[in-house]
Length: 145
Image (cartoon, rainbow, N blue to C red; front, side):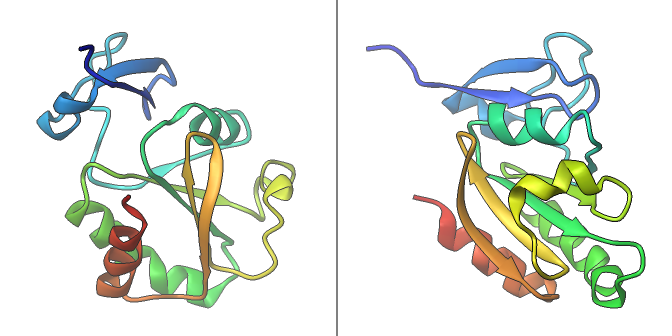
C-alpha cells in the first residue's frame, strides 16, 4: 500500500515539492532551497506566484485577497497572521488586489477582504469581511474533510 503524497509549492523558491502525508506535520523543508514549506505565517503572492500556489498546492490553501486602501483589510492582517500561526499545516497566503489586479481578477472578488479556500486547485469556500483570529481558525478548521 503506497503512502499518499501531496504537492506543496515552496513559498521561497516556488519549486513544487511532493511530500508524504505523514510528513506534513513534521515541518518539511523544500527539496530545492531547503527552506520551510509550511511557515506558520502568511506569505505574499504576486502576479507570477498566485496561480501556481493555488493550482499546484494539494493541501488546504487560504488566500486573503486584500487592498492597501481597505481599512478592514488592514485591521484583519494581524488576525490572519495569528490564525496562520495556529494552523501550521495549512498554507496561508495573501495577494494585494490593488497591486496585482490582473492576478486577482479570475477569482471574481467582489468585496474586501475576502478569504478563499483552495484545495487541489479548486475553490472550496470563501468568506468575505474582516474576521477575528478565532473565527478565521474556526472557519478553516470547518473546511478540513
